[in-house]
Length: 138
Image 1: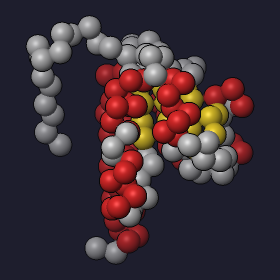
Image 2 (image 1 turned 60 degrees about the vertical axis):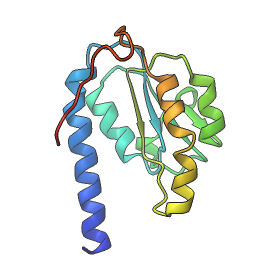
Image 3 (image 1 turned 180 degrees about the vertical axis):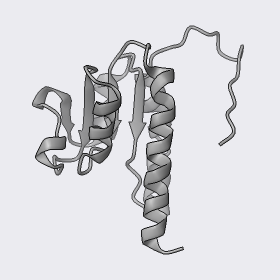
């Protein structure tokens, strides 16, 4: 598969997943967090799917298109591993991360801290741990 086809497949999957969870998250209070703003495509899609909802984006620096850049109070720059810690406990309705590099050795390091950060920023659902499991076939 060409890199172009792989990129298109990845973005199509990303869009489809975000669209499918919009209704699931719709009534859950709390902000939406976007880890990895990039050029702002996903941020713009989240803004369309969650109108009126606070969306906080994180990235090393702002490189997004001006129309797809959050307001200053909702843009967090710097190391996501460190800056995200200030948002642990915020009770986010949704946290989306697209911060992979495509380099296995770098992404393996990210996977040592990202799952814990994601769990820490998300809202609790009130279900006792281990009581109920949800599986979805894709």
